[in-house]
Structure formats: structure tokens, C-alpha cells
Amino acid sequence: MRLVLPHSLGKEEVRRRLHDNSHKIAGHLPAGIADVTTDWTGEDRMSMAISAMGQNLSGAVEIGEEEVAFELELPLALSFAKPMAEAAMRQMGEKLLAAPKG
Image 1 (cartoon, helix red, strand yellow):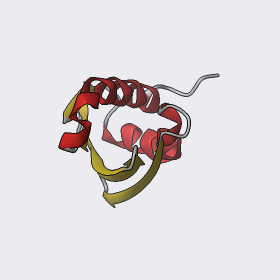
Image 2 (cartoon, one colour; image 1 turned 90 degrees about the vertical axis):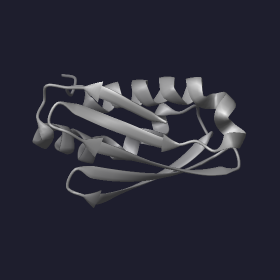
Image 3 (cartoon, rainbow, N blue to C red; image 1 turned 135 degrees about the horizontal axis):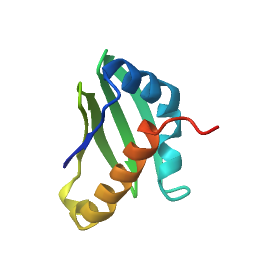
Image 4 (cartoon, rainbow, N blue to C red; image 1 turned 120 degrees about the horizontal axis):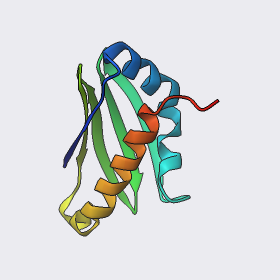
């Protein structure tokens, strides 16, 4: 599953915001539903390991100059959850890219 969000921030600013907020990813999911680990595997690529509902999922965030792509490998057993996962990824992405409040 792939979700692309456009932005006008430039790669450096997106990278900074993701670095500053990647520890908050699990907080965008319903309480206790998932454990999320992130790792920067390149300057513009963050990998994610997600443990949810007895399943281990992998995903990644790829930073582009005008868009950010969120990828999630959803196993067949969780295919029913695709609309929920897509909505959560969109909400998470928008919050991670949002300007700091205050």
C-alpha cells in the first residue's frame, strides 16, 4: 500500500520534521494497538517496523522534493484493514509534516 502526500517544504525541512517527530508515530495509532520502530536507512528514507494485532509489518517513508511517499506492506490477513490503515497513514503524515504549533 502506498500513499503520497504533496508538500511545498523542500526535502531538508521534511527531513527535519520527520527526524524531530518520528518517535510520535505510534501515538497516531489507537492506544496500545501497535509498537513502532523507525530507522533512517538513507538521507531521504526512513524504514518502519510495526507490530500490530499479532502481525509484523514493514513500511517506509520516502522523502521527495515535492511529495512524501508512505509505504506499508499489509499482509493478506490484514487486508480488511486497508481503509483504516490508509486513513491512519494520511493523518499521521499530515501531522508529521505540519508546522510546529506556537
